Length: 78
Image (cartoon, rainbow, N blue to C red; front, side, top):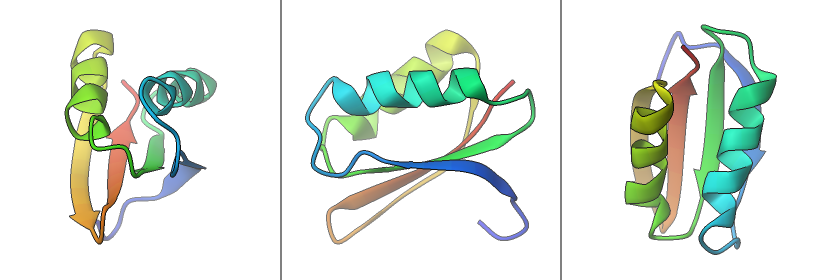
């Protein structure tokens, strides 16, 4: 996503559920409101689990793209 400044990036590739979600939640807590987190994951359940986490916590999923089995999320902390 062009024009978005990423404040932090975490790579959860190779980690199985629930670790991508756990690591995403911990990373979000370190950000200030309005900052953007990039999460890279390979666990298929992340496709649904991370958006559910964001909805529950009230944060914004800016984008989710998948390429060659790698899922990349851009998340804005609210």
